[in-house]
Length: 228
Image 1 (cartoon, rainbow, N blue to C red):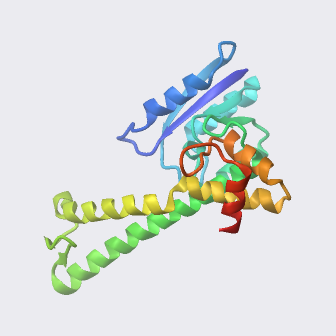
Image 2: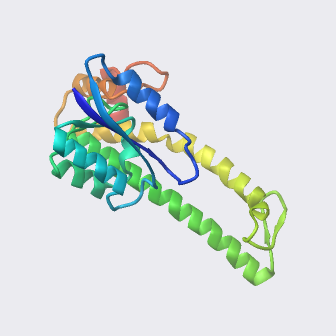
């Protein structure tokens, strides 16, 4: 197979996760596969417009008939509009973390990712709004640890607030585990289509999902999640 590989990192000054993406892609390739070119873009995943480097990758796919290969679906985009536009373009693409994903499952995961990004954005805006309001009314804001914040201009003033947000984010991540939410969304969707419990379990396993204890999904576990 011929592939054009696309990598994305979130910010212009950070390459966090790039090595992991490359490793995932390299491990997924077979000896007979051919990578025509790799593209790397530094851009937020919530951007609702096609990014220039991504567009270059897509143009090469059109010219050569190659498949667009990405490590993880959320590296391509975290909004439904970009995913939908890509699908309608007729270009084939494949995500290493979900090799058996269908158009339906890809739309579901994109919608979940977009929703989660919106929640994070709103939470951040609300926290900053509260701090600004307290500073304006009282001349300062008292963090959870009791430190006084008088300005948002210096990163050091936000150290304690940043720690508090980090702890909250970790708790929320454990509580809302995106992969668990994606699995439940996929189960509900496939169940509505009339799929059998064993078929749903196989779809979950093929897409790299694991049960709560790390093993493969079975029909009885799918049933419990449907009834939960």
